[in-house]
Length: 65
Image (cartoon, rainbow, N blue to C red; front, side, top):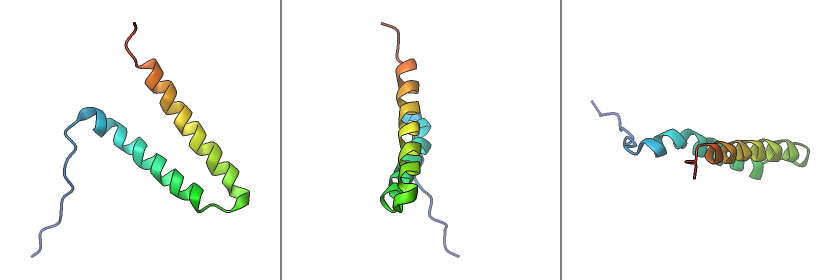
């Protein structure tokens, strides 16, 4: 019997929280690089919307100065 390889767990809670977003952004970039011209704008807009959402969430979660 062979043991199933396990991915190391992410101990940093912030990185664990951000990891799905980072993966989705990388996947969107890969889709964007392989997109045909008609759908290129659609995926570019999707990526920009996701990035703007992430910036807005980061900006709103900063501690008040």
